[in-house]
Length: 365
Image (cartoon, rainbow, N blue to C red):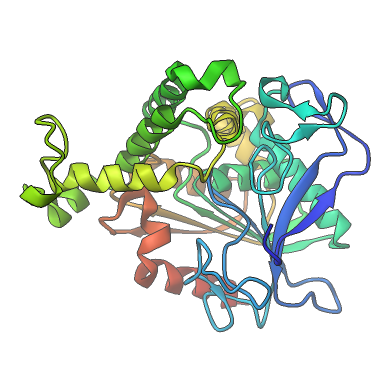
C-alpha cells in the first residue's frame, strides 16, 4: 500500500444495485490540494477499468500517476485551486472492496461470491465518500472512459449535487461492438485452465487469459491510423525473433506482446471480469426509461463533453448523443471533437489537445 492511499469504510450494510449486500465495504482514494473553507472547490475523478486512485504524484507518493500530465500544481486540473479526489472503483483490486478482497463473514476471498457489480454501485460508494469528507456539492465530477459512465450514473442518481460535469471518451451505454469485445476478453480469461472457476490462488492467476484480454484491449484503445503511422509493415529484427514462424514477425505484434506481459500481475482477473461486465451493464436509459429521459435527470451548471474522431471503442457519435441530450434537458453544454489519431487512449497520451480543453472549462466562471 502506498503512503498516499487513503480508505473510507462504509459504516454498515451496503445494498448492491442489482441485489446482494456488502458488509462495511471499503473504498480507496487519493487526494491532492486543500479543501476550501466553503467546501466548494472539490473535484471527483472516476477512473477507467484498470487504473488505481493514483492519478498523479504527490509528496506522499512521488511515483508518476496515470494522469500525471493533467493533474497537479499549475496543470489543467490545478491542485493549487482545487481539492481533487480520485476514487478507486468498488470492485477493483487497489484497496477497494472487490472479488479479491476477504469476505469477513467467511474469512475467505469473495471471488465469484461477490455480488453483481454495476457502475451505479461505484458511483454510490463515491458519493458516500464525498459525504464522509463533508462535501455537500462538488465543483466538478470528471470521468474518462468507464469513469465517464460512472460520472453519468453519479449525476443521474444525485442530481444537483455537482456544479460541473466533464465526460471524456465515453457514452450513455455500451455499444454492441464494445460489448462483444469485452465479452471475448472475459471468455478468454474464463477459458484459461488456471482460472479454476475463479478459485485460483494469489500468484497462480490465469496468465494466458489475461495476456490475450490485454492484447484485445490494446487493439481497441488505439486507432488503425496510429498503428499504420507508428509501425507500418516494420519487421522485428532477427535477434528478437523467437524461432516460432507464427509469432513476432511484425513490430505491431511485438508491441502487443510487451503490453500483455507488462499487465500480468498488475490486475486481479476476477476484478477485471466484474468491472468489465459492469461497463456492459450500464445504460443511462435505466434512470428514466430512455437515453434522453435518463440524461434529463442530470442538472448541472455546465457540462463539457469531449470525443475523439479516431475512437473505435466509444465512437464520436456517442459523445454527440450525450451533449445533445444534456443540452435538451436545459444544461449549458460544450461539445469538443478532438482530431487525435491516438484513439480511445487519447485522453492519456495526447495531452497537447486535452489539457487546454479541460483547463479552459475549469477556469471559466
